[in-house]
Image (cartoon, rainbow, N blue to C red; front, side):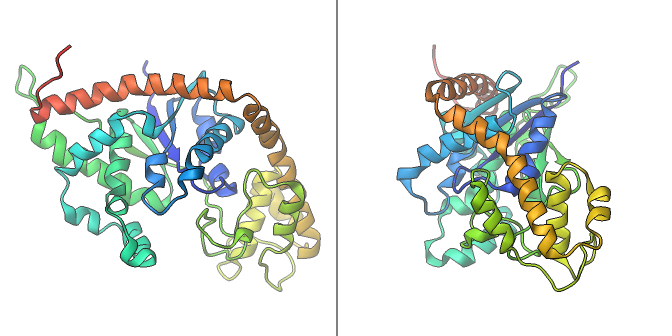
Length: 343
């Protein structure tokens, strides 16, 4: 029986942090046992905002190495770089030509980021969700892991596949029934506790774009920096930590991190820390964080010392990904009426 296919990816801009790991990559590792998994470094998305071209390639390799260091197995998953599979760009253009402009203008993330960028906002930022739709639809993904901030983008991909491609261009079988050109993906809701909040504001998601470096712990932070950031993390004056109190978002977030990183789970962590002061709790959280990240950092250093092997993984992943993506692109090109390339 064919296993359901999953596709996901992370931008290479900025260092991957605990939120990326606990909210996404850790779940990807588990999915390898039960799903056909495709994981890409989405570098085309990274240039929708101003970026440093001198760092993009290196950041791409760093992100790919961290995928592997966190447990993504290239023997069980297809790991590749988005820009190295040209079908992503071509399908995005084809989808652009059938996607209504007002669908993109209502995207919440575009509105928020456009306000920050002002006159510098690019067409690419507006068009980001169509490229994301192409990423997903190229691989006939059954499931897409999504957090709260990406649900609207997945709905757009579903609408494009159903209403703008399948409904308008799908061929018919002998009985006159439409044959879907693009598989319509379903959301894969991530397990509880995956949403990691900022260390400086328990009501805001941990983010690579936050200008305050102290708001996040990156996967490559050394132990002394991890300890320093946790020591300075925002708290409240109440003794004892607890979950679920809306008046104490920082307590909920930091206790949640401890529950996951220590491996003991939420119930045990809540019991242990119910009467604990912050001065005693923060060193425990720092120690748990350092120990949880130690094997990831060791594996990462080993991978970066063997660049040829990492590039081989990405080349093999690109070849596997391109075989699937090109087949999907060919179906769409044919349905839209393009002249096929001659052998």
